[in-house]
Length: 116
Image (cartoon, rainbow, N blue to C red; front, side):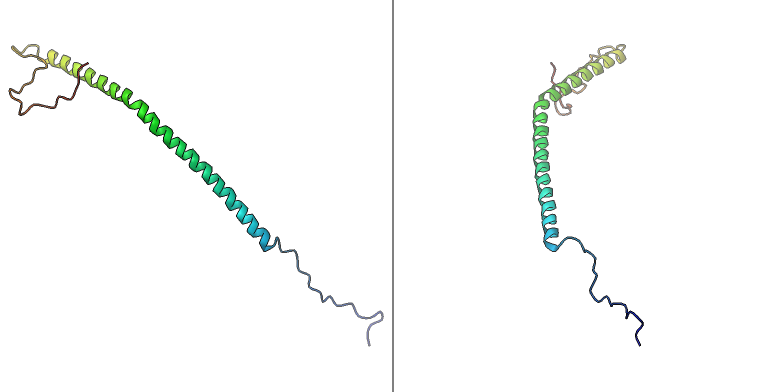
């Protein structure tokens, strides 16, 4: 016979916990994150293009100054070499400092240094 007061009621309903947002919410979230990423990528590309343009123009503007600085340095080095040659060869009779040791044009070194 059943116990007094009857049997305990059976729990037959499913008790599933909340499993998170639905699929549409997830797709919308992924789309929002991708849209934000592409927006930031576009801003980064604009910034990179601007920096590249600035770098190119800075090189264009600095080239004459760098060439002039190189010419001044080459002239200074040539004058220092001439002074060293004069000092070293001061006891040699008939020696002219800076004059080519070659008597023809066949074995002549490059004359690229422009005197200012």
